[in-house]
Amino acid sequence: MSLAITYNDGTEQRIYAFYVSLGELRVCYKEASQWKHAFLGQPPGTKALGQPNVVTYRQRTDAHQQIVAFVRGANGHLYANQWNGSEWIWVNQGSPSGTTLAVAPADDASLAPDESQPSVITFRESIEDQRIYVFAQGANGRLYVNYRKMSQWAWSDLGPPPPIPAEMIVPLFRLYNAGTGDHFYTISASERDYAVSEAGYNDEGTACFVYMFGGDNELLRLYNPTSGDHFYTTSQDEDSSASFQGYRHEEVACMLPSDVQRIPTADFTPGAITYRENTQRLYAFLRGNIPQDFDGGHNCHLYLKYWNGTQWKWRDQGVPPGTTAVFGQPGVVTYREGAQPEQIHAFICAGIPKYFGGQNILDYQIRLYVNHWNGSDWEWRDQGAPPTKYTDNLPHFEPEVLTFRDGTEPQRIYAFVKRRGDDHIWVNFGKASQMGWADLGSPLGLINLAGRLGAITFRTDTKPREIYVFAMGWNGAGDQLSAVHWDGLQWKWQVLPS
Image 1: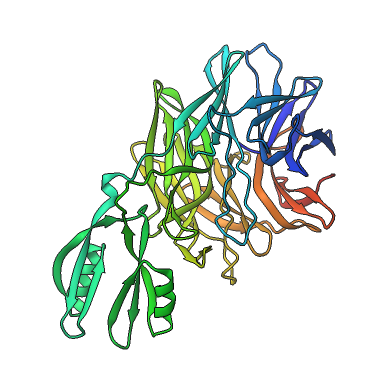
Image 2: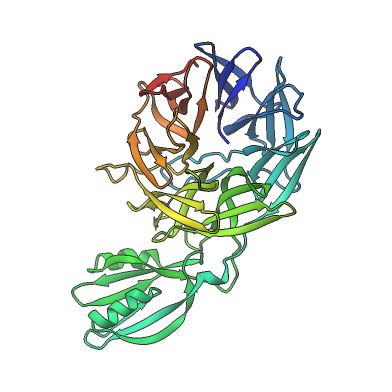
């Protein structure tokens, strides 16, 4: 899943990088050693929105390889722009029955909303039956897939993520300090035990049951060090007022449910892969969005929709330990380290959202995490964040991930993110068990890098395998695509023709 692919036209291996500007689809491609640019136009009767996703496709082993780029139209339809070997052709894939495709909201109100983009992979059912699967978010919050079986296209409704599971409902412990007259509430057993043994509190048992995350209201916890009093509220106005009266923020104590069961919706485009475990399977990871009652709020965790060989199933992956929400679209790869079995790695940013005045403000704790399958269970791993002295230079929400083997070196994972604030691209790379960060810099002459990154590996008969990472920015007059390239020795930036 990427905005870039490699393609062999019968004479040489080429790179194609697609992007949308001013409502039309465009492509930069490398022919021999020269980068060229082409305008592919707008979908018939509408404009293209967001970013494309592209695959190469061969329906039969003896058929000609094709390039297919998918984009969302301004009319809510899915469109395919296909290279059949001699020309580019637009095809209207339509929309799911009873709805259109959605626009993904921006997590930070200071950013323009990013249009929802389709997520596309190919899946070989048999030697003579390769299929295309395009996953997309519906405007009604449900996940859909548009797939090709032989020569026929069809839409399938995969539904919304499941409701909050029972294991997310936990006791809220109540404690009392006779010396200060303070009641203290927590869902943490270790914090309860510490308050009893070290802070003079008596355990009064369970007050009620609440959500760890995913409820309808944040119960904010504040503390006044002068009086020793804890203050709890779900009101943003009371929270602001208490801050001026000597109270300090501690954390979100818990999430409070309403009388109505809230159903998560599909939020942002999924990251999709195929994975073989006895049989070939499809996996689509996405963020679920559970709307809150207060303005601008939501609380999200990672979901997995997978095909087990006979039916589609949902799985709630939760959130990384110490966080309350994941953000944006995950980047997903399969990876094998040494003699270990192949594993799935889903990279996504997570942290603790803070909401003030209807704006979504992310605190400094946002980091990159990976949710991976170790062969028997799912685990979370903290990848950290790019080093920075600026609190606003945080990772972008959508990592672009690939695996790469450099000569005789072991296979490595490369997870690329944009760092907000200075338009630098950073990479978290290495063996899965030991990854570190590197700063790849930013393109000269471009600012305001926008949209999702695209990354591919590329190899010719005369050169070792290389990496290309594509990003779109503003050159002062219009949108322009740039690339940072690993040639086996160093990373180099270049601005591509427009």
